[in-house]
Amino acid sequence: MSKKLVIGHLYPDLLNLYGDRGNIQCMVKRLEWRGMEAEVKEFRLEDTIDFSGLDIVLMGGGSDREQMIVCSKLKEIQKDFKEYVEDNGVVLAVCGGYQLLGNYYQTSDGIITGLELVDLYTEQKPGRLIGNIIIKSDLFDMPIVGFENHGGRTVIGSNQPLGKVLFGSGNDGESGYEGVRYKNVIGTYIHGPLLPKNPMLCDWLLARALERKYGDSAEMTPLEDREEKEANAYICGRFLKKE
Ligand code: GLN
Image 1 (cartoon, rainbow, N blue to C red):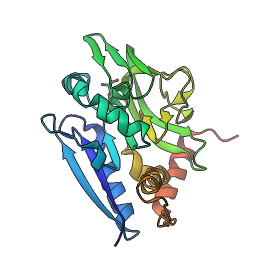
Image 2 (tube, rainbow, N blue to C red):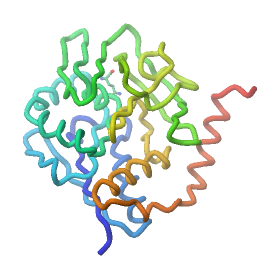
Image 3 (cartoon, rainbow, N blue to C red):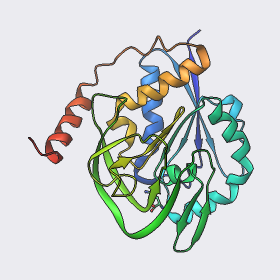
Image 4 (tube, rainbow, N blue to C red):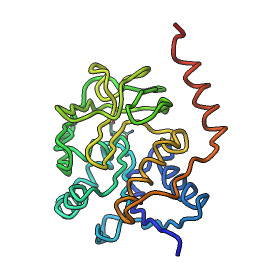
């Protein structure tokens, strides 16, 4: 029997900026290429979520208005979602979804209460942080590349960041850090979509989910990823100053 991962996509009708759905397609394909299976479950606001049946949870980016709508539902799922995270459940949360992992997102139109899954908070400041971004994470040799567009500035306190900013703004445009890593949760401002541009990060998430479910990730043999590596090198060459 081939191994199978169940991917839960939270609120794809609301949190869907900049092709974040591509992250799901990337996970499905990279499992299939290794002879494994993937099932994607999309959840709308009115749906009940059984976190015990999920192996990976994805939340994409959204506008402040859409985040405000989603926020009304978060209280109901908080307890189960928290248990899933503490039990090493795998989560990828991008931009608006990343902000919702935290305690709150303060906007000029009011406060959006978060899931309190990771101890961080976000405040809106004048001007948006928009553009290409490159970061270096301890997890990978290859830099993570993508695109960011956010008004919120995220403070992660003593949590571990996903990486250090080599080009772009990151969490707040000041600290030099981007994203957050807590247990098997990754929060990041990087769209792109993130995973097709950064296959090593996709594989990291898949490996964590396979280990949690089956006790090993033996099938996660390297793929060639020639185009992905070339694209990454091109972006780094374009934006990073040569010494
Ligand atoms: N609405 C949030 C902000 O502007 C997140 C935006 C996004 O998901 N791209 O900060």
